[in-house]
Length: 223
Image (tube, rainbow, N blue to C red; front, side, top):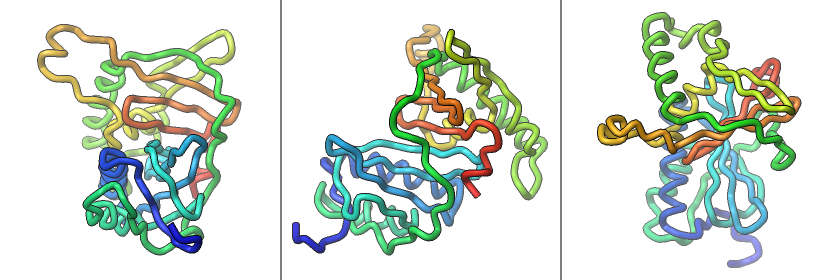
């Protein structure tokens, strides 16, 4: 790699495909989505997108990026990922750093609270989507629905409510594995989502990605 070369290098084809799936999901929510890519220690890249639910969604893949912090259009990034036929260089498109609004949560320091069965989160999402279809306007689901706390998670350190906006983001981004009919019949509850928190942030980790919500007014850091 030459010193001035700019781009994205997924470690494997599977990492490229994972990032493409993340980017495609982001575009389904917003056809003008901007993806922020940041290098992390250990040869990893964190992809971020600010969703219309005022929730940040992220996915970690193996690879490297130059420069180490870059915001790009999701549509151009997806085209570059699809055009790359191997795990080599990907052109992420023109820099759109000025289009990224808000701050990112810290990488470390989150306190573990508890695990929640993924099946329960999926059930809540199904109910939420039904209500959203019934009550949505041209501006999307009503804020009252998105702000409704549908789960409460507590530990000796903290108690947090998880609002519907987090649940809907987890499912819209495809972060939760969809159970098969066989899984439902067997009552499989092994799959969980992990809830962590900081005084100013809520973090929910699922198998295929993580969502972050600013505690208080999430729009403060996303708009």
